[in-house]
Image (cartoon, rainbow, N blue to C red):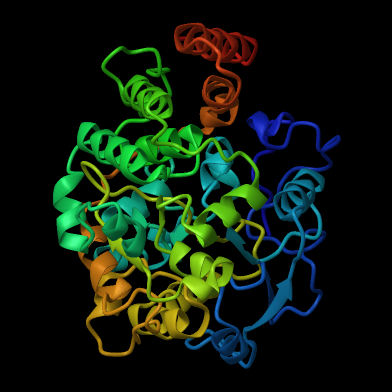
Length: 432
């Protein structure tokens, strides 16, 4: 058992504030770091409905090809999941052998040396089974596949067919998709809806702004982590201008609270939302009495991705080979098909849709099949890069809300968002 070189005491950002670090991080060594003292028991951390319990039960009986290794699934609840894991890493103790990581895996990019590269454990040979854009989101800037694809969230425009029909607008999915092929089209469509029925198209300007960027090949920073959000022809500025224009024309609903948003969808005062595939279940649970009234159309320009998770294997794992094998098995196409049926996680493997296992999720969307829709559009999600520095860009969301909710001058709000972000980046040593 050989100790790896000691890791930077700062943990380069995401462990900041977690407390003083102890001894060097030991790669591949479980002594003093593992949760379980049983050498054959690999501990998994996950949150509710992030993995299929039926398959976790199978792995608990043994990991195929690596027996007697077996899984111990530990359900970690609450909003402190990330904090709990960062604290374990900072203290170099009680670290799981494999764990779920949310769509914010980019927070861990600066500390990729603490994680196992799946490509070194059979992952390279299986990459073609997954959407390229999903794999890219879990690939570190240096090219290591430290975060393995689980579920995804390709986006689309969910809308109330009955509301559009009453307003005399195109209402069938193909018609709506054709009517909103560009963001200018979307704004014009929403303006007509507001004039004819006094109905908003989506809930807030910030939600529209966020989904515009989620569907953009380039976001706030380039692949060298250099800021690009000030560029006049960049995605952030275009998203801002689009959201501001939609707010001005009352295409957005200025419904800032969750209670108002839910009431808007239920009552039909808001016609829809641009959201990830997982929203099929959310709107079903939020507005069950509106069953049969909802449909899904392509959003302007191209779909994006919102949400979806990953599996990661810390280097302290008792058996990285067994842990990565488990991760690749539970995300295999057939298992993901069953997982969709069981807990409605949208697969990251295109072939999951063609093996005959997945079942249409009822008739909440009338005769439209959300699976057929998203299996088609998910192929068009662009490959993009989310920088670790995106944790510093919260001022944009604040200021776009100030424009919509408080009437702040859009130019002043834009400059305030840029200035505040640049000040934070300067303090963090990130240069333009």
